[in-house]
Length: 426
Image (cartoon, rainbow, N blue to C red):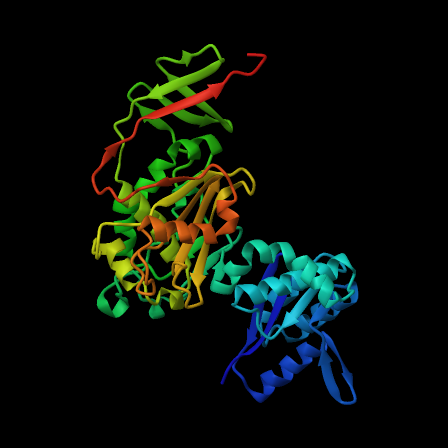
């Protein structure tokens, strides 16, 4: 039997509770819970989706939880969630929160309007007016993609929470195959500031491989930015040492120490730092793809087996991969790393199967996951790439993008030049 589920959508969250097992006793408990949100009319319980977090409702839920939490501890979570909603703010009670991005977005707009109008329902014309701008920019995307962004402000476990059920999504091994799952596998490298998004389905062997061979290319590529931002990894904020200087973060301020600082007439200071650091471009691309494959749901891995073998074992049908779009966009700045995954739900082959946006601070990387069996087009081809990029209107309308070719498989030495503008009081 299915669990008895109830879902809730607030302005900044979405969650569900499930009461199990499904028995006559739990059905009675579930009916009593629903009664907290509804009224009985003519012997029929009627529950509206639109709910208001009044003092009365919060007290009713708290009283219900106190009476029944011993038999169903999940009610404590419900009580905590309801009590944390700001007083008199509207929220929605649903059977399920839609997986479809377009449907979910419409509910979010509806909920926002309820709170803006104190419960007044929008007419169809008013609703269409509210969604017009979004439809113009995101309408085609939402028709073709489901968009997922795992929360990074709280503990988020991706995959099977129980070890006995785990199967590594990269090598395919489980406990019965000798795989171990004793290490915490961060879906985004911890060195980039991720403490909360964890991949359960990554075995220790794959975790070690990615941590030693793939992820350092992205981490070291972002070393200067990590230091300037004060991003703390497992070993704190990095200090970067060069042949002729170093960069560190002291008391929240970036400090550049160099043997020579150049100054030009425009009061621009520049420092050339000579490094022995090497980077492999294709491994930088793989590190970005590893984040994507670590943060999508298991059922979304269908069609990506070739990609996984390329990522884990170096197997690929060709050496060509699409270019990576890179920009510095200050709107939406976040010290915590964020990943947004676009998973195609339609059969429109002009769109890549999976596209991701990785952001840290102001740096934004947008990239196609290569070698998907669900892709009919080769997006390393410039014409196909341009067509796809033009369909992502919210990106191509922003100036300043550069498009990096990261298919090189040999190491390159990375030297850094830092430019600073002197202030008027300097």
